[in-house]
Length: 200
Length: 100
Image 1 (tube, one colour):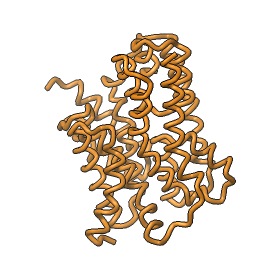
Image 2 (cartoon, chains in turn purple, red):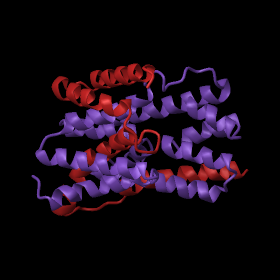
Image 3 (cartoon, helix red, strand yellow):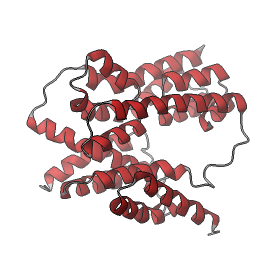
C-alpha cells in the first residue's frame, strides 16, 4: 500500500503504479525507482538502478538451484518470477530445516506477489489515510523475520560465523551509503570469510 | 511513455537476475556446491543486518538493536518464527512510544 501511495505522489498514474508491482515485484527496487521518477530521471537510470539493487537475486537463485534442479525448465522459470527476498528467506529457511519440494516456496512466492500487487492497487487508488506503520513497529517485522529464519537455520558453528559476518558487513555498507549493493556484497563475501577462518 | 519504458525495462532487469541461474544448466564442483550451500544463511543474515544496523540507511543504535536479542532468544528456544517476529515488533513499538 505505501508503494501505491508514494508512486502516485511521484507522478505515476494508477495503472502504471499497479502494473509496476505486477510485473516487477521488487519492493526495494520499486521504491528506488519512484525516487528517480520524482527527480525526472530517464528510463535507463531506472533500469540500471533496478539491476544493481536486484543483483542479490542472482545469488539467491543460484543457491536455490539444487532444490529446483529436478523441475522442468518452464516450472523453474515460473519459480524464478516470484523470487523475492521474503519468498527466498522463507523457502531457503524451509530447505535448511529439511523441507523438500517446491510447494512451500511457491505458495509464499505467489501469495506475496498477489498481496504486493493488491496492496499497491489499494494504495494507488485509495490514497493515504493509513496509520503510520512505523509507530506500530511494523517496519521491523520483516527484519525480525529474517533474523528468526537465520537463527532457526543455524546448524554448525560456521553458520554463526557466516551470519554474523554477513549481518555486520551489510549493516556497515548500508550505513556507509552503499544500500544499493550492501546485501549482494555482504552475502557473497561472508561465506568466504568463514572459509578463510577455516571454521567448520 | 517514458514511464512505461522504465517499468518494462525494470521488469526485464529484475527477471533476468532471478531467472538466469535457474535457467542455465551447470554441474557445480564440490567447492562451488559448498559455497552455494553457505549462501542462503549469508544472504538472509545480510538482509537482517542491513535492516537492523542501518534501518534508515545510516548506522543508528535504535529500538531495533534493543529488540534484536529478544528476537534471537525467542527464535532459538521456541523455534517459532511468528512468535519471534511478534515479540520483536511489540518491543520496537513500545520503545518508539517512549520519548528519548
